[in-house]
Length: 307
Image 1 (cartoon, rainbow, N blue to C red):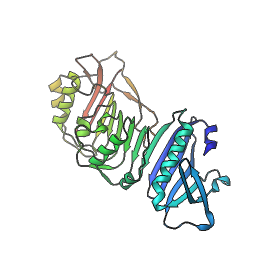
Image 2: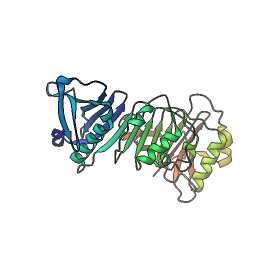
Image 3: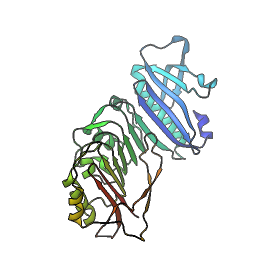
Image 4: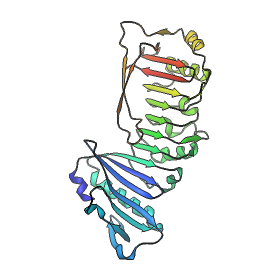
């Protein structure tokens, strides 16, 4: 692993799945490289056993270094089931020591909800990616409390249950959810970029949101909001427009909204979004007079705040 210090590593990705741990690096020019895999095994091949020392971890493990013959194939470490977390922890701590001066982005990907149990003490996680069928909100409460100060999260999993009112997930600056999520994620969000692509909300939720945004009571950090439902929610668009006295985007006013979102599915990279806001309505925040573009449809809500 020491050879990696000679490379310009921008990000390290730890992917936890049922098969074990996969470590991937990404260089500044976005070249990805799988460098190491770790696996628990009920039975080790005695012909491949070697004593491996990684930091404080020193055990007999099965070592497959086909990476020496094929650079596309990473070195694989197989340990006894009872040593799994110890080995994963040692791998992380060793890589952390190797790269802490360059402070690379640390991303964790969980391929199933069960992989939460495999997680080790990883400090400095910047980005979480979660796959699987369903996850209870209480598990996400614990995850973001255990690994605080993350900058973004991509959740492909359906979220069931309810978040606690003081959940650390509300403080994550960028959240993107592909499946259904509790309405509280929208109502209590304190970050800058929220994208929910299978979200249930109603006209009253939209009115409450606009009341709080315009008055400055909440959502002061919000820059982009996108809520979408694949089915009609019967949002009363014109009732909302009349209630707030909204008018379409004024002529001779800058109308291109550009935004860098970190809601990327796999790596949390900045993705530039560009919108033409001329078909949108304009809203203004009373406290600081910030302008935002608003689009309300029967199944979606968009708000883009101009900086």
